[in-house]
Image (cartoon, rainbow, N blue to C red; front, side, top):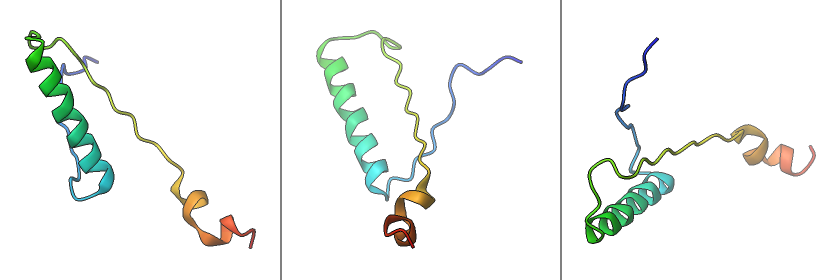
Length: 64
């Protein structure tokens, strides 16, 4: 199976994480523009994984 060169990003920009990622990408873009970097000079891969249930359930935090 051949993988595509690019996967279309899906990002919820209404969340704090989404806004932080957009801000980070804008900063990287500005740096690359100032350095006259060629297109494709940088590849950014973001992995996001969290086991939310044990981290955010108050019963888990308080041992109930």
